[in-house]
Image (tube, rainbow, N blue to C red; front, side, top):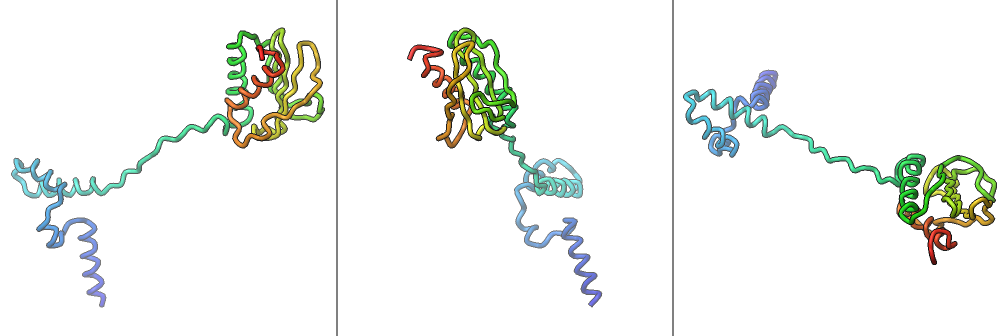
Length: 192
């Protein structure tokens, strides 16, 4: 019984080392061997070509992992303060400047919401000689409840309005367009 196990171990070792080939492999030559044998016909050494075939077969069987390039995270999925400070505020400034207006001051702070008096994240924007607006986020999440308040220069806001309550997917472009729509609706940044 032990002799059979020893014989099996020897056969398995030879097969794993590719030192012996079954008879059917000798009859049917793989494509990779053909390519190498053509290259080695000029070689006088039979053992040299056999070793090259073994090297080629080992290379062919090596699995190479395919790495996919990472997709960049959409700006809306980035952390709240990064989204607001790096993407939303600069985009708002650019859109308002394109309309011929100048932003005197714009910032994000965790402060008291105008009119409501609760503490939340507020973007306070002062457009020179035009208006002020406060865009409020209940939590540090762009999908949280939002509100907007508007006022003319040097005045306090008197109305707080819900902002983007029916939208399921909040995007950077959507926030900007709705802010501009509210300002335009009040005839603060253009003709209606």
